[in-house]
Image (cartoon, rainbow, N blue to C red; front, top):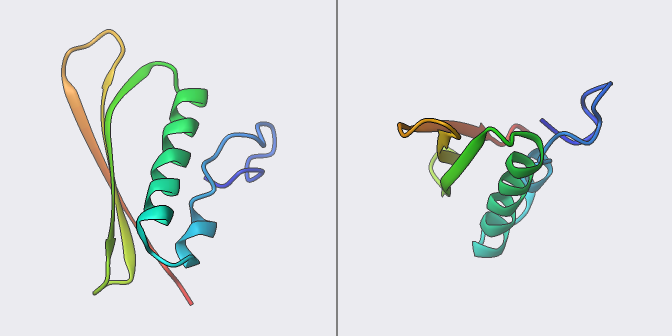
Length: 88
């Protein structure tokens, strides 16, 4: 979700979509990772993030984002992956 996309909670979001059209170098990938980490820490206190992997896929012109986390009172890790594609 982008910032200001939700009517009653405009500050929720990581604004990753705007970064999809930046040059995909280590600085942009780190910035995406940091934005996701800040959004999760601020708006989802019930989970503990163990790892965030952000990888650019040249062939598909997309970014693969994987978040490894666990719910605060559980020991089982969960992995969630999403693919964001640039659309022209």
